[in-house]
Length: 387
Image (cartoon, rainbow, N blue to C red; front, side, top):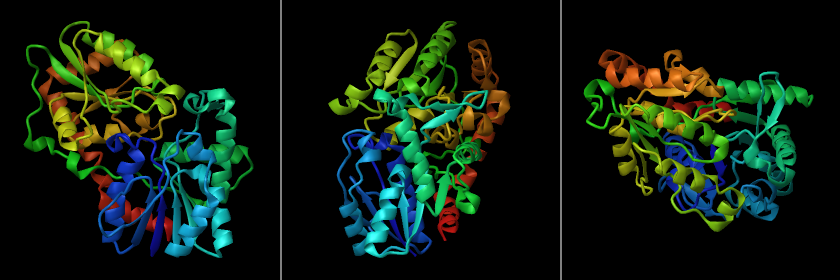
């Protein structure tokens, strides 16, 4: 099977913070191991030397990534690679890819991967536009482009059962029958970030208290305002410390102009006592060591959360993750570690820091929850989904 993998990269200056690129870099070699011929078209190479690579332009903004597909470039790629399957990782581009397939005279299967959902649902089942994609009222056009992408695809892949239910509900409201085209294929874990808690000792509480790590993007739409409030609560007793990951470093001016909330949140968090803002500097070895020194992880407050690679990173390292009851997080994380109020969060975090048996049980469960996400297993499910 020849696979042309179309990858948009939103963080070319810090690839280690781009979940789509990490996913491709882990998955492409596993697909090759399984016998597929893979070519990646992206602004930066992903995978290993067995994978072909076609360099594409970096879109200046997240909106250009959705609305500026180059059909001439796509036609040329398809004619060069003669794929059996084309994977559109920016699903809003799928209609353009379908057009290019038609012009190139290709009968390749078109698969779209919904890495990011531009919507969620309220408790009353009202569609909520993702605020991160609603600048100048663009949220609804993005949502309609997403729906057009669903309609254009032969296969639609999502990360989780939660994401599948949301995508199905959206399609039903638009009188679109996805039938058996919708498949759940979770993202692979990074095997470099795997540590069996049975062979390591949990990070002990030192003089400054046990460390909770927050390794998510600091965008406002990730619920960073709520996390700032939670951080104040967690460190108020002096028994807990927080390590906040600055995953982006210095961002391009184009990206800051659309949303400067990461820089603002970083400054606010750095000003809090017992909160350390650290950078992995794009180094996965350093990133692993920063996670390894923590006692537990903290999930984001993002309402429309269909998946979180950062949560999987923590769990693969044997770090229990405490989480608000939201989206996929509530589906995936142990109910004993979920909370609805800051007081509940503090109680769970403090117990993880002081009750060795409780921590050991949840460290084992966290690690085990990622066992099904090895690149080899994910590649097999991926190939099954697109066959």
